[in-house]
Length: 226
Image (cartoon, rainbow, N blue to C red):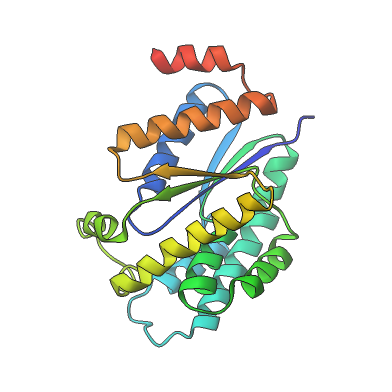
């Protein structure tokens, strides 16, 4: 059996990655591909309960270390319960946020140390690395304006400077890993209209899936035009 393909979607609050991820999932599902779309934290009974705690705006006294460990606990659960079995079955697993979020948010923006958080990620996931990571990059001021149209949570309510640091953390992580020869990253300009962002996403994903043997590139391009 062919091994699966692991795609992660990263970006700051209001970057649009979740909406694009849902669109990508439905599109690939329509093509008959074995695909599953999940969010982190969440995706499991344990993870969803942890998500409720992390999103609770009344818990402003939560320590940064507690925050990180809760994210890691939810991550350990979804990897063991869903991601690994799905990949073993040959499925395309799309995950909205993964370990890079903890590196950018807690390691970089909250100053816990990126190297230390990376090490914790490796332990939590048994060093399971994505095949492709799409980073939806956008000016945080624009992104947070988008999110004001929806109900905010505990992390959304943090100061703009925090979200700027998150963006810098992502870009630094992407730049560092790319320079080290790890080519899993692709930066998407998320300031574009959603349709254009979705189009870029599809173009990147279809090429990667063609190389991995899940599709024949000409067929999916014909389907996209239709």
